[in-house]
Image 1 (tube, one colour):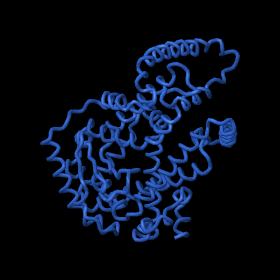
Image 2 (tube, helix red, strand yellow):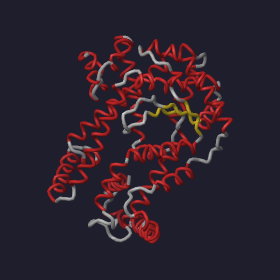
Image 3 (cartoon, one colour):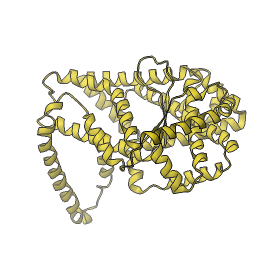
Image 4 (cartoon, one colour):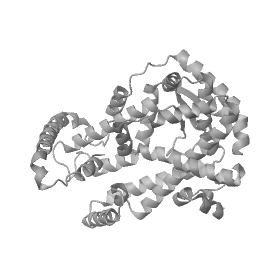
Length: 408
């Protein structure tokens, strides 16, 4: 994020000589503020980092920052939680048959675990997921630092400053998401071979807040939401290869990143990375893209295409099935679409810098792809997506559905 912000600022430094003297106050003032902030962080880090010298992220701080920035919605009682979970289970039983008929996968949603969460519980659950996801990088860092907790690249306090900043940034991101997320399908990636189905989470305070704010029918809105998340269950549980495909691809990518970091200490590796970055930036690539190897970019492209089609398929099914089940379906869609467009400039910047905008683009591109194929060839042809990994579209095919249809 810091690199992205600095790059954006750099583009505004093309002032002419006549105006340059008038603009000096801002960079000087910013430099003083930055220097003071760095001094505060350095002082704090001298004490903050002593007992965590071999960790990249302080997960206790991630959790505390996320809880503070999540808006402090009221905690759910056990009675409220049980009542909500019973209601959602009844909804899943209601939509199970229509979803199976449309998706072509026979799945009993009654077997899918359902949890109604408040924001704090959602944060705790996802902190554990992130912690597990980033474990390979934590292990690499511990190997590099050794028992002393320092590396040849560190100077006093900087490791702790970075840890403090990264932990705070991740906490802010989770706190933001905790205010926005309505539902989630958790498949437990990167674990051991799993036989249990994924879990459906519903963040009930957020669901209630949106429903009341927009004046939507309470139960219909929850069925609408359940349709989208339950379709993910059909994708993953109705086709066992899907979980393994995503798990293996993500694991391979993370392993490749770890190996790149492990090798980057040599002068040859550093020269190779710099040269690769210069080549990619010269032709207009992003910084993140520039730092990846061609193999890593291929893996990311594969994951991006998969996420696009997965989210797009869920949106399509929700619309196709929901429009027949819910009397107020069109009103719900209209209100939610209008709400999604109401973002301040600061929020839009936050989405771009954190990569969350990429997630929103996945919904849009994937939905357009599935709708296009269904309109031309029907849902049975669309459902060929889930027959075999080789049937998944590439990023190019998602943007040009005719190429995928021709290949099929």
